[in-house]
Length: 226
Ligand code: C5P
Image (cartoon, rainbow, N blue to C red; front, side, top):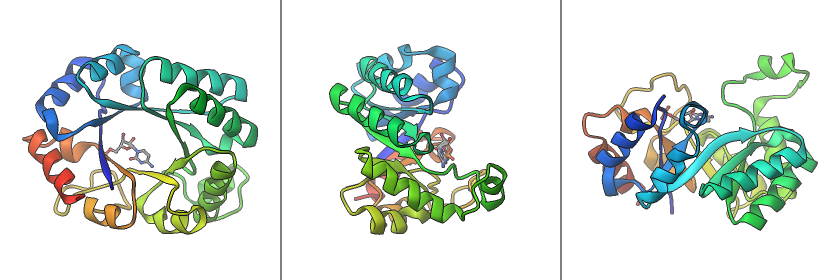
């Protein structure tokens, strides 16, 4: 089953919650990212929980193991249901995060390679490998360290499914319903294609939040996942 997560990329709580209230029952999961969380803090998670919603707190933690472990506990403490770390934080950090997630009952996934990075960007930080190779390496490391899934692009789904199996959780942004604007996303898939490729969660922002009728847009995407 593939679940829809709407990305609340807003600078303030009022705009975010207006959208959530307009969407109503058409979407259960919401992603709170760095922009919104930095501006308004934990209250946005509490407001979403008060509306019966599930929250993906997209903070992409990347720090020493002790700090990341405590951050994961804090994410669970404020009521988030899903959070994430950078897999490139390495073995000790991933293991500490996995332990913290198990202890606090929050679902945890890791970001492998940012989709904004290409081979040249990787080379500039000393990684002379293709993005695909690095994604595969970090997905396997993530799994070995006990973190149950990754954030990945739809195009990386096949290689991750092959390397890490069907029980490994995949959270997939870069989704565009057929006929909608690609915005700044380059490598996109439709919700149907991502579901068929085995995504557990898809993250959709502007096609819902900028729609004339966000509830209808979310309902259509959710229906296309079934
Ligand atoms: O509006 P749109 O559907 O492009 O929003 C996608 C969301 O997923 C944004 O919050 C974006 O930051 C996030 N994201 C992404 N690509 C990634 C990781 C996260 O688009 N590789």
